[in-house]
Amino acid sequence: MHPILGYRRRLLGYLLLWVTFGALLAGVIAVTGQASLRWAELFAIPLAVLMGLECLPCWYLMKGMAPDEIPVWRFVGTWLGTGLVLLSVWIAVASGWIRALKSLDLTPNVDPGMLMPLLVFAGCAGILMAIFGLYTAAAFERSRDAERRALELRALAREADMSFLRRQLDPHFLFNALNSVAALIGTDANAARRMCLLLADFFRKSLKFSAQQTIALRDELTLIETFLAIEEVRFGERLRRSLDVSDDALGMSVPALLLQPLVENAVHHGVAHLVAGGEISVSARVRGALLDIAVENTCDPDRPASGGTGLGLRNVRGRVESMYGTRARMDTESSPDKFRVLLALPATPMEAPRAHPDR
Image (cartoon, rainbow, N blue to C red; front, side):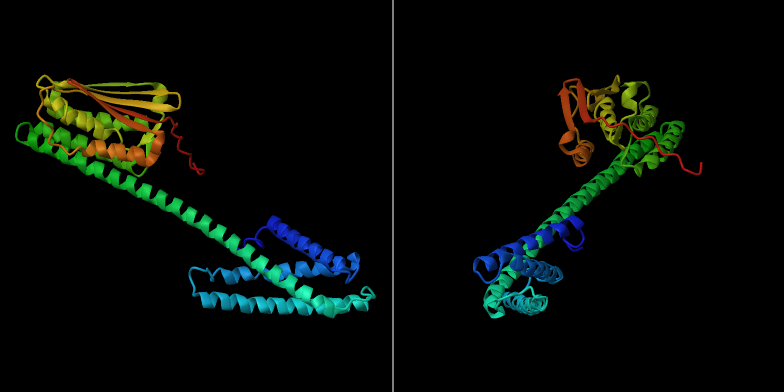
C-alpha cells in the first residue's frame, strides 16, 4: 500500500507541505520583484501541489530500487532520468500556466524567461525533497516490516519449542509406566491389568487436553490423580498422596501436562527409594497476581545417586520460560528428607468454553 495515498490524513499533510513549498516560492518571486505577491501565490501554489502529485508515483519505482540492492550506476541513472522527465513536465506545465494567466489578464509585465531559472532550481529542489522523503518513508516501512517478521518468527520459534517440549513429556512418562507394567506382569497379573486400564484412562484424558496450550488446574490435577493411581498399583500403601488446592486456584490456567513430570519425578526419585514409602503433596494457592504451586516429596537421605538425566525438570523449566518469560519462576528446594519444586505462574482464570450457537 502507498504510504500516503492509502491514508487520508497523510495525503492532506503531504499536500499541505507542498502548499507551503508553493508559498515560499511565491515569496521568492515577489521579493525579486518579478511579479506581485498575489500573482506569485496564484501561480506558484498550484504548481507546487502539481509537483507533489507528480512525485507520488515515484514510490512504486523506489520499492524496487533500494540503494543497497542495485548497482550505483543503475540507481543514479534511473533517478536522474526520472528527475529530468518530472522536471520537464513541470516546466512545460508552468509555461502553459503563465500563458493561461496572461489570457485571463492576470499576468501584467511578467517575463516567462526571467522566471525559468528560478523554476528550474525550485523544481530540482522539490523533486529531490520528494524522493528523499519517500525513501525515508520506505525505510520506516522496511524497518516496521522487519520488526513484525522478527516478532512473528520469535512467536513461531516459541510455539515450536513448546510443542517439542510437550511431545517429549509423553514418551518420558510412557517409558517409566511400561517399565512398571513389565515389572508387575510376572508377579501380579491382575495389578498389571489394572495398571494398563489406568494407563488407557490417563492417555485418553491427556489426549483430550494435549491439543490445548493451557488447561484449568483442576483438569491437570485429574491427570495427576490418574497417574498416582497407576503408581499405587505398584507401590501399594508405600505411596501416600496429599492434595491441598484452594478453590480459586482450581480455575486458573496452567500449561497442559506441566505438573505430571514433577509428580513422576517425586515418585521415581523419592518414594521409590523409601522402604517404608513416602508422601507426595501438591498444593496451590492464588497470591495476588500469581498462582503458587508446590510439588513436594519425601526422600531417603542415604539414597544412591540418581541415574536420571533430569529431563523432566528441564522440560518443565523450558516450558515455563517459553510461555511466560520473566513473568513466571521455577525454583527447587532440597533437604536431606524432602525435595520441593516451587512454581510461580501468572494467575490467569481459565475461560469457560463458548456454547455452540446451534445448541
